[in-house]
Each structure stands twice: as structure tokens, then as C-alpha cells.
Image (cartoon, rainbow, N blue to C red; front, side, top):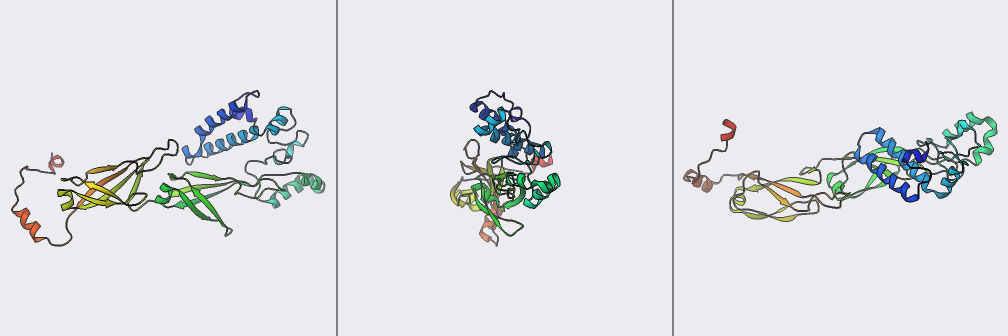
Length: 303
């Protein structure tokens, strides 16, 4: 890892509060949720997080400032060709880690030969980060909840889906990655969410849109009907004389914004449907009916 102070853009004399403020600013700017499919932003976010974790550990910061350890947490007197992979108790290994203990054992064997045993005994390394994708139903993502993720080895992870989760959003499960070496910390699991489309609801920003069929009688005379929402059915008043395409709003029935806490709205668009069977009385009425206001709904299309 680079100099953690340089990564966060602060001086070595910065206070804990200044370091925390710098981290929050950079993390907000480079968070993977704001840059989906941007590997560079994801790497930058990991680098920023690693620097913050390093400096908020008071003992590790003191030792770094004193020149006792380097930015990876390794003792300064250790040989350069394995400094990036090992450190004293509590130190982190390279960011991507090792796939398993066998891989790290092989590295030590190649680096030090048969004399590496005593050094291996005191070295710890962080496990490998792993990445998965998880398909999530639209309504579960909107409401939030827990969904199981089946791993290749047959194990399962309980993934907490945050309320209002977005498509391609990446979640980090700390310590759920590959095992650490010699008591080192586990790697992390990064879960990319793939939100499945819903049969009725469509999300646009924090608002949700829904098309609802209504009968001709309900549209002409007005009515109270039940419509689905993300949290269950509610009553909606259809104004008298509503037309196909009329849009009604159900306030605060949309998606909750994770940053502001405010909820979007549910917009209901009416779709007038004619009776499925024969309605002789309706036909007879329309044949003898002369509208007071002549109308050509196709006028604009033909002009």
C-alpha cells in the first residue's frame, strides 16, 4: 500500500478528526455504488478504506510514524521481497490476499527455502477477497430483507439486502472471503446485486410507476378501488370522468432514499378496459348517444 497519508491527502500531523473527514469525503466520491462497473473506482475505494483502517489504529499509526513499520504494516527490518506479503500480528497482507494457506506456504517455500519455518510461524496474512453476483426480486430490493447466497462449495451466506437497493449495487461482507493465513484476518466478499424486473412495478429514481386497469364504468362515474403497493394493497379514489392515461399519485409509497431518508412516490396510470363479454345495453346506449362535445382523439396524429 502507498503512504496512507498521501492516499487520504492529509499531512502526517493531521488529527483523528481530520483523517476521518478526509476519508468520508473521498469514500463518498469513489463509492462503488456511485460508479457501477467501474473497476478503477472500486480499486480506489478499497485503497482509501485501507488507508483509513491503517491510520485509525493508533498503535499502528504510531509505529508507522516512528519508522518501525512500512505502509503495509511490515517490519522495516524485514527483507524487501516479502514485505508486501507479511507482517507482524494484526498486519494486513496484500489487498487481494492469497487463495488459501497452501498458496502462501508455496510462496514462503520459494522465497526462503527450507529455512522459512521460524519466519512462517510468526507471519500472518489476509485472506483473498471473493466476488459473487446475486439475483434479487424487485420487491425484496425495494423493501429490504435477507436473501441466501449459495456458494460454489455448497455453503450459504445470508446477505442483508438494504432497503432501496439498486441494480448492480455492490455489497461488502467483511470477513466472508477466503481464510487468512496463520491466524490472519479473512478476506471480504463483494456481492453485486442484479435486480430482477417486476411484472407490475417499474422504478424510476426513487419513484415507482404502476399501470392499473379500470372498467369503463369506474372511469366514467368514478370509484374507489384497491391497488397494489410495495407494502400491500391500499385504497385509491378514481376521479369521475377519468381517461385512459390519467396519472394519480400515492404520496410516499415509493422507494426510500438511502442518503436522505425521504421516500419517493407511487404513480398510478389508469388503463381503461372495455367489458370482455357482450353488453347489449351499452351498445344500444352508444348507438343512440350524441356527445355534447364533438371530439376527434386522432386529430394531432393526422395534422
